[in-house]
Length: 170
Length: 141
Image (tube, rainbow over the protein chains, first blue to last red):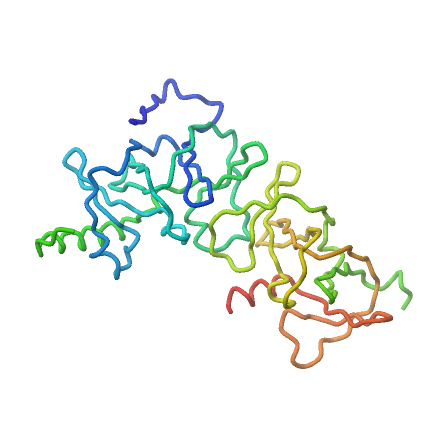
């Protein structure tokens, strides 16, 4: 499923479109304009043997798409959750990163993103841009670039290149 | 000192024990609400409540203060300060709370740093807590 790029001229000013996705028992919102494509898991090349003992162990695979390599991040591990059953891939638009998630729920429009309460002081301050109120449900809005920082991308590239140099096929 | 001049405190139960917070830091006692969770790494935080369109974080101080507290029945909404801003935090408690006036005695030796005083009440001695120090102690643990 290709996510259509929304023209600024025609953008709705009523709310922000998001993609609701699930990881384990939790639902998250991804800003729709930061996701280029949602696809199944075909075509992934696992690199988890190479990354598992590194600081980028959450990078499980690579995906080659349009002559570009994407690093595939396990969302469950990123959010320090128990391993889950990933079945979908969200390919980001502005980063060479794709996110493994359990399922895509639906698209929605959020009217207002509330700031994360200051009482939360851990990694979640980087993981989320805020919290969306959808009816009575609170859904964290994910800070997509935080899935794999530029420094982590360099590390992942180095690990993957080393794997390629060794000629190891995973 | 007459009781009207004594400082006032909110006493809240966690299982068999009661603890106290300065009354001016407590906004209300709320009935059980649906607590919602999302992944995070902040100690003691167990989720959030939606109260009148705002999001209130839930901080389960019982994890530090008592062993094996029974199910929490109510939420005590206390104010925490973060720099210049104040924010409500919900503390799950196990029963009804009480407003009391009492003199504050200094904490005895060996009390944890978050116990900033003792309230001598007719039938019990109640620890007066500094919520910030309590949260900080757990974060540094």
